Amino acid sequence: MRDEKIFRHGEKIASAGSCFAANIVPYLDDAGFHYIRTEQIPDGFGDLATDNYSYRKFSAAYGNIYTARQARQLLERALGLFSPREDRWYETDGSVVDAFRPGLRFRAQSDAEFDFITKRHLERVVDVFRQADVFVFTLGLTEAWQSTLDGAVFPACPGTVAGTYSDERHGFINFRHGEVASDLASFVELARRINPAIRFVLTVSPVPLVATATAQHILTATIYSKSTLRAAAGDVCASLEGISYFPAYEIVTGPQAPHDFFESDRREPSQKAIREVMRALLTHCETGYQIEPEEEVIGSSGKEAAPSSAPIGAATAKKGPASMSDQLSQFAAQADCEEAAAGL
Amino acid sequence: MTIRWDKAVFAGHSHLFALGAPQGYDGPLELVEIERIGRPIRFLSEKWGGTGRSPDYWNRLVELSAENPVAFVYYGNHHYIKFMFRPTPMFDFYDPDVPAISEVEGTIVLPRSLIIAEVHKSLVPLNILLEKFRKAGCPGVRVLGTPAPKRDSNAYRDILMRLPHIKQVAAAAGIEIAEAEMSPECVLLKMWRATQQETEALCLKMGAEFIPVPPKSLDEDGYLADSCSSPDDFTHANAFYGELMLDWFFNDRK
Image (cartoon, rainbow over all chains, first blue to last red; front, side, top):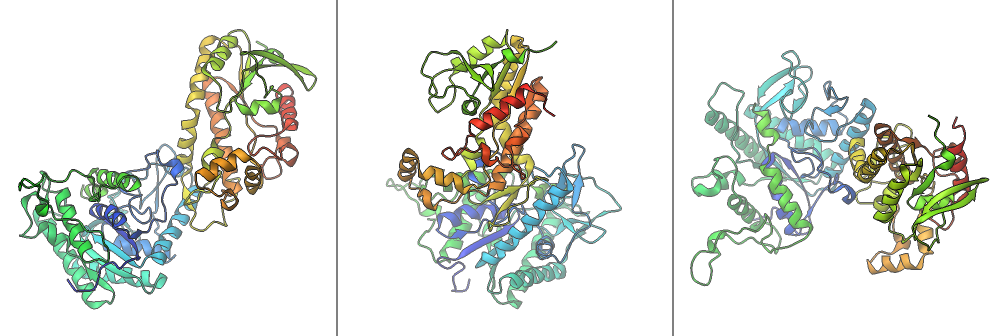
């Protein structure tokens, strides 16, 4: 990696991406960086479980963003440049489902309410980019489901989490390298209309696909997807200023990675892997907070200490809100997520 | 069957005092008859500690309900307790009849269904109580609405500043009331409206009657009318409100 720091002291950081991306947030909090949150639920509602799918785990309540096209369209919508023709679904209970946030537990009950909620949500999305010094985007998938009317990309195939699938209105797409690179570049350009000085850090999620809508074997589909994303990220970093790549994917999946960097399902990165990713990241940041590598934690008997059972990001055994967010982030990362649904 | 509402037992939480219940009562748990709007009103009374009614109070009301219709006020300050001071971030939600917040940057919009879920949490004990009245064979149950919030939420801060014990508690918590930001009154109004609406829905489901606040107690935008506002109480209405409510209760509500 280059010598320049990924995050500098006092910088405001925002992020989005797939399920894996939610893991880094508690570490950023612990390391003293200001993680931007523009749609946090006020404390008075804190004991109401609001939703699955990480809507409240990122800088705004956009939920998991799996593809570069999704990210680009989110900003296009927020800037009033794109109004998807299919942005809502009507359920039999009268609720109105956000097609781009179908997992929200509490739904609008009318078109007027839906429009009110969505308008303010997109304003808060703009606030994220306005406030951020650095934006971290974790690329997850190349496979997606889109509207045949205008190409709007849904985070989950209609009919899986909500809505109804239609052969006429919906179609599958597996983004190719050129499309991903172009979408990323557009995403960056749109963000810099809001905040010209914003920097980006791109990563690729190491989580393999759980299913594929292509005719390929899941392993083949996974490697295609991750390779495409990695190459596109590399191209964009090479061609645009102020964008760097952080090798989370390589740390977890590279030949040097130990077997236990994945859980027994060979899909979920282990806590050990996440710690190592964050240790490497923070080593290249301006922070006094560091995570010790597990192999260096030796007890006085000379035997290797047992793996830390502390919550994510609690290397200094902090208590209070950071610990709670750690546990919630862990739960969110382990719960079924739309990435799985997207593969159905 | 005609219900003799003139024989009703009036009971409930602190909003009962505006109707005429003896706030300084220091006797045993019993019915106290007080004349209001030219009628004798029976209030179930116990010493008020400021923290709600005792289990004995509600048990006694259930006992009385076997032979008497019951009219009671239930809490009514939930929106103040949690949201009087501006939370971070400030929130808003959809109400077709109340404008949105316009003056607080960074306001997030919550789904109304989330607000309703929050309100329902506070109505669980009411649900239990209504069920008890039903099992006791109460001839008639009326749940009275509680006063709307004031138009100017800063008025709450002004009142708090005049209460020494409140300032003391705030100071101990590191809060400087003079600098505290209040939630916009439109949100408090929406919260109050949601609470009244959900209370009404619960009453309908449980076979009770909900008596909404009298229209004369509201100003043109639905806030507590000035005539009903107490200058020294930030969450309760005054005696004039109580008269309006009792008049509304006993007469034709059209």
